[in-house]
Image 1: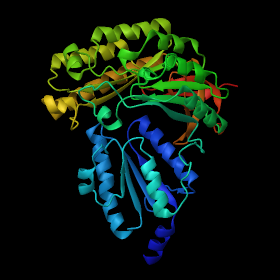
Image 2: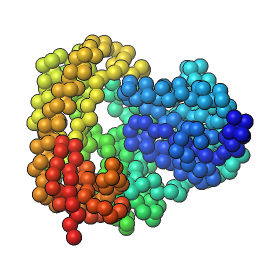
Image 3: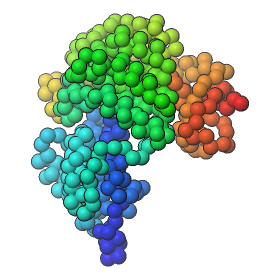
Image 4: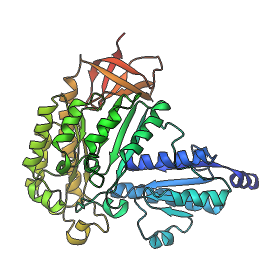
Length: 434
């Protein structure tokens, strides 16, 4: 045990655990890059690392519970190995951390989303390593595809959402800085980038004219070496004609839209403070499909929001049936402390009803996806191979369809033409064409 404690004390390894949205993934990637620049080494486990970082999410109760469970396991580890450095970052950490410090006194530092400097400074002082300039550049390509935050925060204040209170108001990055980051990533092998924002369509409203999302897409489209560009998450109120036209014209921008509608009933949408109606959402999807006939769509749904009746939920089912989304992310409403709905509305729908409604959504969407994917059998698609899972190489089409490929040749980070031989609701299977 003494030898192990000594090894931990002298270790310069780190371990980062991440849960939540792509913004969290991007934050973790940037922090890992900073650690690498500081001379630390990446570990695959809590046990082998001196620095342990939990990047948290509280958008859903289930995510918050997983973070709390992870924090619980760290308590005994800290008792045995007090030299370990524990960091809690992400959306669980708000402007005030007094409650968190009382609940988790063995955590050394708490950091709000995107606030990486305090973490770097603390570890630099604690471990005696140089941190100068470590956050200024990305030194490691995180994967075949990379996430790039382009706007932080959100100004919408949907009644159910905690994001504006944890990530703050919207702040856009300059186009030149984003383009520079894309160029750095492509130089290290990245061929696909996803431009991220809690509300990505509002990018640039706080910058000078000529710096909106369509302008950024055009600028990134000009970067040599980048092959695909995606963006998410969109808000129906900010999906402009200019953005739609840019997607239709720019050859590297994928024809895929992540467009949450959250609920099908107008009264529920009003209570959620979403700012659009069922009909307005339908018209928007129809407009996009008129411009881009091959566009694919993912969406988000919340079931069992405050006061939702069976008839109101039926409006959501009808929308899923008629819009034929390629992917649906559905979750049961859970109150988030500090949000408008938590302060002013009653969580009146029982857990049992929420569960039943979720199952109805999943059952319907599985049927829809099965039909959509079945129609793709026999067609050919360009696929970027991303990795290997259960002895099968996999990748994605421009429309974000997951494709498993029948080949023994490792062609990760390559584009290949694939003929689709079979399908399920969740993926396609195919062979590489010569």
